[in-house]
Length: 193
Image 1 (cartoon, rainbow, N blue to C red):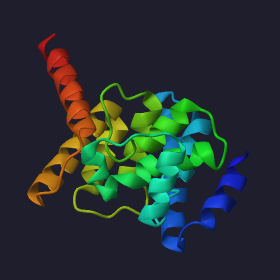
Image 2: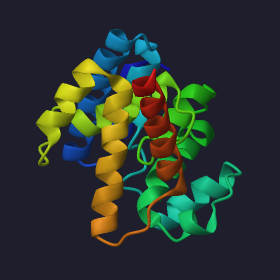
Image 3: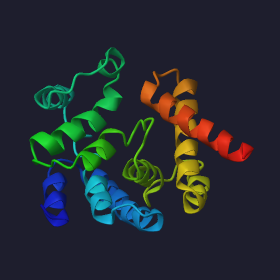
Image 4: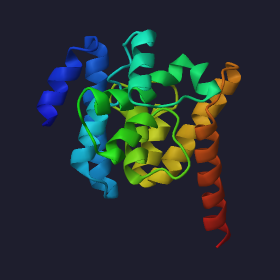
C-alpha cells in the first residue's frame, strides 16, 4: 500500500487534529530518517500510522491486541494510555496486512521506547516528540538536541517522560526504564573513553 492509501484509511479513524498530527509526525520522521540514515519510506509509513488507534474505543483496542496474539503484561493491562501504541501495531498487522516488523515495532514502542531500539524506533519516538504541532514547554530544547544527536534526544525524551509520569504519580512502563538505562549507560561509557 502507498502512503496516500494509508493517509486515506487513517483519516477516517481520527478527528482532524489527530490526523494533522500524524501527517506532521510522518513529515518529521522522513526528515530525521534522511538526516540519520534510516529508511525514509518506512519512517513515513510508521509516522502516518503511529496513532492509528489513538481514538479507538478501549474495548476495540483490546480486541485488536488479542486478535494479533499479543499478551499484555499486568502493568500494560492496567495502563490503557499505553494501549494505542500496542493496538496500533496490532491494527497495522491484522487489518492492514502490514508485515514489516521494523515498522510494526516502531509503532508499538513510539510511546514508551525500549532497550535495543532500532534506528527507526528512535526516529518515530523523536518525530512524535518534536513534530511541528507540538508546543509543550521544552519542545524547542528537544528540537535542538534532535538536530545534534538522535540518541541524546531519545534519552532526553525518556527522561522527560519518566519525570512527567513520576510527578503525576502514574505508572511508568518498564520498557521506558530499560531504554533509558541502556542509553544512559552507553552515554556514560562514551564519556569515559
